Length: 104
Image (cartoon, rainbow, N blue to C red; front, side, top):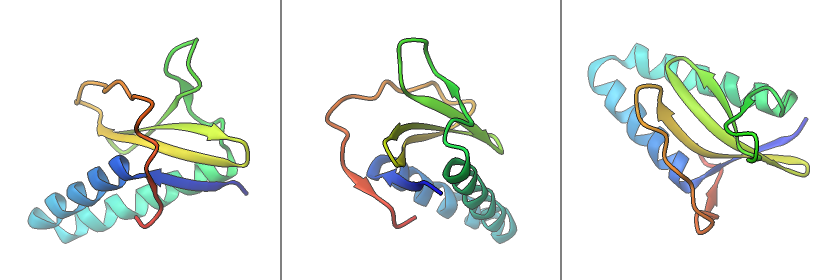
């Protein structure tokens, strides 16, 4: 299995989304966390599971619930770069976003 890391930007979004959901429903927040773990497990087992965002990019996207994970494979690991709600506009990632965390 391949290691899955989460960028600081993605971790911050996930943390704030869980907090938001828990204000309205602890069950929804728990389901969110459960589905996120399943998405990470999928990427660990099948790192090419998502689709390429553009033909010239190595960034891939994987949908879980109504969220989109954008990630890249770097050798023997997958790095989740960005998480967004499916209704949010895609953000262009820049090279300076190389700060990673895995404590989500």
